Image (cartoon, rainbow, N blue to C red):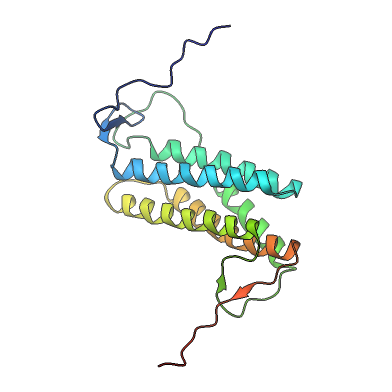
Length: 190
């Protein structure tokens, strides 16, 4: 069967793209920055998922990726337009799943007494990269929400996801017998 669908449309060749709803915006628009950053995060999480051997963590990360695509579609939608098709939604249960995962991991992880430096194992470092991209996405979404409607559950989900990624980095360190790398600020010259 021949695939006639083309990946290129040529409609963005002049630096614009369409939101869901048809509104044309420049590719540097805050909505594009927001969902583009979540797309970047989604790719890094896919890379992390490919490296993790634990089946349960892989399943959670796959669900996170699906939820990120949902978040991206919500951010790509013009809030001032009526959309004919139904879009998937994030809900409180999606946030609760992350909270349950965080709580389960924290039950056996050593207590934190300081900030933790990223590193110690490639999986830990990759998880921290995901976390920092997630935080950047959160900042962009909050900036967007200052000027236009953004569903609060989306902001809450991305916030909780960054928390999950931080604890997951610690979990991956623990599973690989790598101690947290505490930050020890050097104040001796002050």
